[in-house]
Length: 207
Image 1: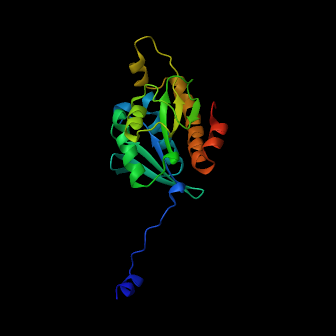
Image 2 (image 1 turned 180 degrees about the vertical axis):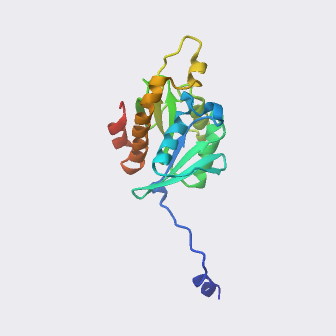
Image 3 (image 1 turned 135 degrees about the vertical axis):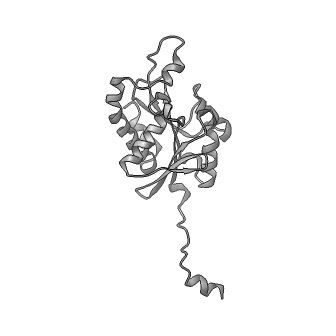
């Protein structure tokens, strides 16, 4: 008789999403009010901007905060790890496994000192470049073969002041230009899922 009760049950089966149409977009940053407007938190800024554009809310989840975004038949999981930068890999690995998201559908957004302010460079793989967040992800996933989105923060600091610069806040000129750069970055994230990696690199790298 179970099938009869199931027939009239109010519970509906959960929607099954094709893993190839699921994307994990990880914005790297540090939690805490003192880090909100720092250069090192640009990963958080990009996913926050996209979520605001789409009127999405982040919810506290295991190892972070997450918003779910649907666009052109794809589902994007926007993740802000709460592990602090040097343990970011724990959150990436957990949500990658939990949502059954293939490695090629992961994008990690991070700051890059070697690029001029606001410049976008998206690559299918690469070293950590001394970035503690990428270092953690590389170690825990045991691979470097995932898409990384590097957002240029430039290297306008005096010798010995790198940490102060990276953990410092944007200057007034950068603040005025940031919204336009965040808009382009959000569009690049959408493109990654909807148009694919190669098309996204062609359209946005160096912009």
